[in-house]
Length: 340
Image (cartoon, rainbow, N blue to C red; front, side, top):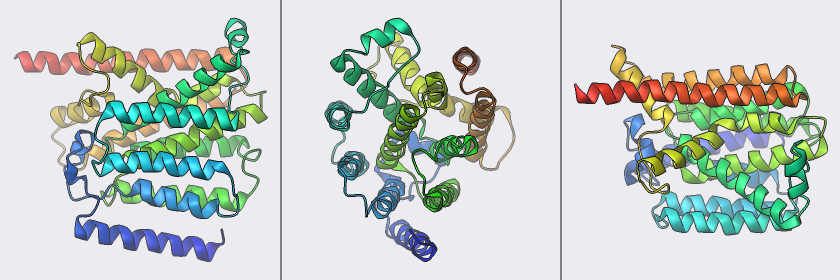
């Protein structure tokens, strides 16, 4: 992709998004619960559309089935965004079918976890296929869960890209440095539009960015097995743990794990800051920046010794305990406040 084409794409995105916003097309007015923190309803759920267009243009010369599955993943999220596929259960079933099919056709698998017993189980092709599919589903849905603050999802995955770029790990996957810079600047452009409430990612954007990231990270690890697999796990720990923690939390309160709620960590942080401070500015963005900064710091610390499995496991456990600690403290605060 040449620089003129890239600039033209940015102008096109800005123009089309402005039209969508003005005409109330693909608007978050549809009432998505995870978008209510932004406080604006006339914001188009167009981020996924533009990510898909960028990927389509980037892969124009690569005639492979990956583009086809990217389209299917996008379409699934897009139908959810426009409320033509509103059932979470049906979407989940379709995700399983799509991701299982992709994993099987692409022969995508995690070569080693460095846990002997588990690696022996993964020698079974079916178990390996199911495990890889499970990992994709967990991260994709977890990413959709955290998409409730402006810039959070884009900022999170941008942090991953920048860490991988700094370590030189993207070269094995993407030798075209020019395209890599275009990807970074395009995501930065969408990040700014998202921060200023000009667009939301929507389900289509959350599905796409997490699907592409997961597949890319597995491929990077496959080509660079000197990396600890737990470094890859750590890069995706937040959406993955958000999903698993939410399922356990909902089971604990006898709620369906497929139903959306307003008790995710980022939502509690937003409400806590709003309750405890007199700041009248954009608390949405502040909450988002806090989470992004924390994860960038963790990624940087992890990158210091990204080949050391024990080091990576220690950081993952720290993240899990820190998440639970912060969550329990804020949850207890609101529980006590509601009683009084």
